[in-house]
Image (cartoon, rainbow, N blue to C red; front, side, top):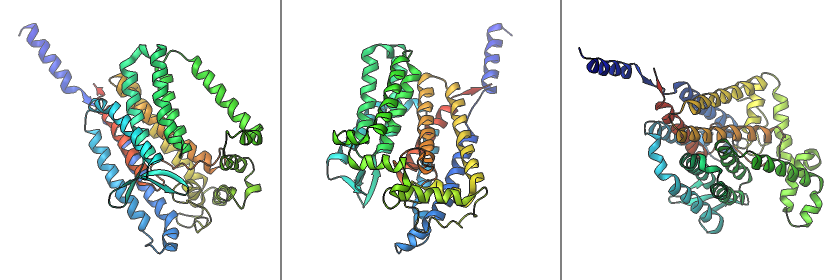
Length: 390
């Protein structure tokens, strides 16, 4: 047998031994979180549904439909080569910007609770624009930073990327503070990892801390100058002293804290919580972590946090071993999105930061959020499938 033939056979044997890394542990955790989310949505929403004259399982069934659609999207995207989506990076970004423009400045924007966050769709349906922008910004940033590589440190490109992130985040900030912060943080962190220039980020962090301190110290003067709206200042005051505003904005925060405190170590038992019975506003979405703490206690809360940490750990492994820069940045963007949104939800519910209305990934009620989060997981799984193990 010739050396050439033997070499071909050796390479063929090595290829047969290689296998792709489809992260089943990540898939299992996500599906478990979704199933657990259904249980919590039902527990937190059946009373609200009954008060509105709806079946007890109304919100459960609505959420289950979105979980089915999200699971189909996740599995479908995981089977498609993630490189295919780089061709839609810029068009997708533009779609997100247009959608936010339609929501903010046209009659297609659906206003609820004084905020225009949803785009009206046919057949009396709606979709939350911020969720579209989160996904498209992740895709656009991963594609652009991968193409620029070391050129991202050139000022013209560095500033151009910042402008693109700023436009997307700014359009969302108009009516959705929490999502605007998340989008800006995703873009900045991805740029931070890709750039060798670290001092602009340090300066930005110092400016943010200074601005927050100025708002807390000179709040009245800032409102007089017109830099903050009175309702925005009220949120900050509620955060600083919720008991002083117990009949106004502090009511939701205090009721959430009561729910957490009454749960103790192991909780009152699943379904046995009382704060969801008309006391905690938005119990099934913005405040669902408080209901979880009341019914499952600190032990249940720590178990849930551990699951999220494990999910982020698996994403970190995929990002570190991704076949190329585009795949790695794509996973990093999703990881920052899920991690930051989880932290912000828990921080709001526990009173660590002002109430901005942010959902808990995979757990809170909300169809658009679940659909796009699971689509993002599908992209991460697609990246994992391209990792070769010998």
